[in-house]
Length: 367
Image (cartoon, rainbow, N blue to C red; front, top):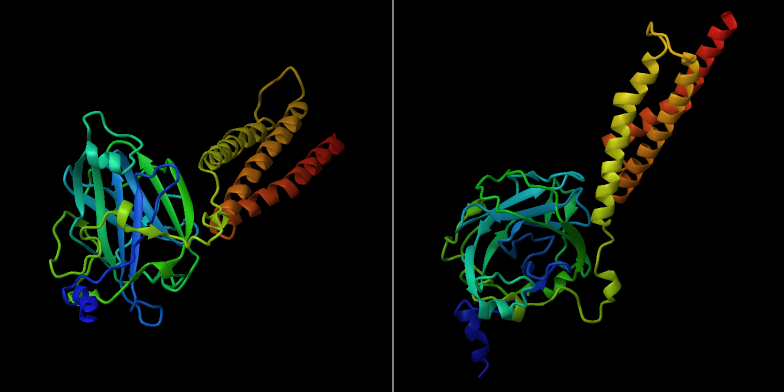
């Protein structure tokens, strides 16, 4: 009776092991992944991904990598009331990821927007069921043919990695409703990371997979797709058919990436921008112009100029500290902005006060 074990493969129904995970703050968002057993770094092949989220989520993203800088990302949002847009993007820093046409993706059947009733919603443990007993969900089922390497080989994913990092992010709000791949997205409400055991996401060969990497493309999609494309997500329910992204023996403390706290980082970013803007746009010019302007003041200009410069320098150092902390936490300390900031602030702190003092000492001496 061993032929019975071959029946699913003969019928094109070979079972895939699909791993899934969700943001701890929003379990209604689910990321699922499976990788054919034939896909390796030495023999590159496709990976299969599903992203699903309520349409109350404005956009949801998934990235390969431990941080935004250098990550290979997929951003999902609505293009209309019945269609979705899946935008492949490159993470270039701690700002909006940019659309890239280099990622080769093919949308699979089941992609689109669907409405489920209250019974199904209860089964999904929805944390926020809608008032009319229905919930609308956007889903992207897709295959990526070149997602083992990205950004000219600076990023790689080994299907045999038992601790590969993914990052996730999302924002709630009104639908974007854009078919543009490069649609602007607002800053996320929450973000995080997880370490995934890719060896658990195995998929046997599928005899009906007749497409090739050359036929795939990045696209805004509806639920239509090629019918002869392997689709491991056909009749798939992530709540009942998936397996955990980590082995049960894995230490839970190692499954989450140490990404910075969003609220804290946002406050520090605002502080950095505000302090630096006030220093260079207002206080430095004001204290510099105070001396040569032909105006009379009830006190000596020098007595006003010196403490104002000192106060501005302290404000600059505070903003500088915020910027260095941000750059360190987001892995951007060696990028252009922090490097230029270190040089500029270093010159101001080391030379500007000394030059100012020598100048005033020379003026007083001449008098």
